[in-house]
Image 1 (cartoon, rainbow, N blue to C red):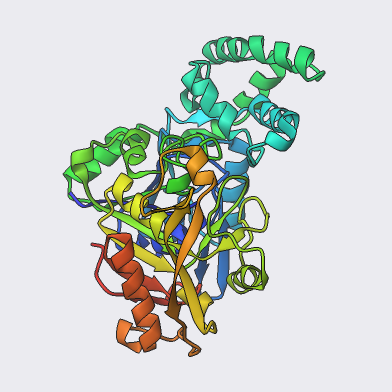
Image 2: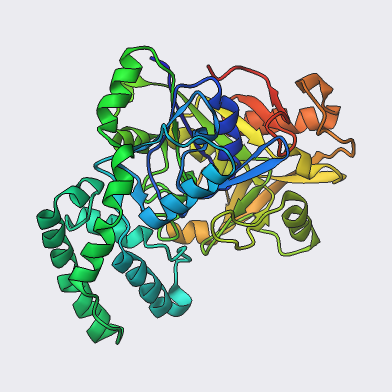
Length: 427
């Protein structure tokens, strides 16, 4: 019953796509369990680069069945655009399964997302404007549209009417926008029904039967731990649970079936959007990390904010996810620095704090306490084993492992599929 959860241990963009793809040849199912097309994964296969937004990274592995779980929110237009792009490049997408309980991102969800974010002005959260938050809000408010609703026009119409009753009042009276017609939305959504039908399945049943048959199932989170709606830097977070517990609710698999939880850590730290970021750099080092690391959001196209490695949030990720392993990515980006600062604690109101403060105000005012580690200048992109790394690079990895609280079982030394050092097998 080998079920693995693979998730981001920082603010997202850690390289989950590379890690999932690395495991893809050894697993039978790869499952997205939360989020939507606000999460971007880049996978490099040979000389080919793939940018995935909604689809599980396992769709690039020929023997793997990719699954979009019930906890995901699906924009049909984005889904079919992504499928079409992969098909044109010769990727077989026919094995994809989509939960009938997954919620649909409707046109009005996108509209509400954009107008409310603009209305917030300086207080904006930094959403992607893709309707993710409003769709999850509809889900919680029990006025959401699910994939299965597209196959009963009467139910679909009733649900769209219920959702638009309040939204049209808000759009017209508060934001001075035109009301959205129920019939127009229903017609657009029904237009996707036939195209979606071959993929729709009872994925909860499929996945549990697979685990009972000793198949290997990998659950892939979008975003990262510090963007979790409950455990992240609220309110500057996403609208779902990318932490390990979200895999159970977002895919319908019990926690006793999870055998391993792998956290993806970048060798430094980045985040996209607003919110506190203690180790953020505003100098030439920050620019160098951004340039060398190619730090631009796959989905948003926004430059990522860059900073040094933060061991405090790594320890926090270990705790809230129950991490059994780390996959350290982009170690090669740090080549060339004589010394590399690592944040080992925070200073808050003159006091040293070694664990993530639960108070939003305290975290906002946290100042990093750095420990300097010696750097290296040698090219590490060809390293095939841990011993191939320069001594200082080895020491850096060991220091991060000790500070973070879980073993580093794999190291990314370049963007390619084969540019990975595997220390301990994940399977």
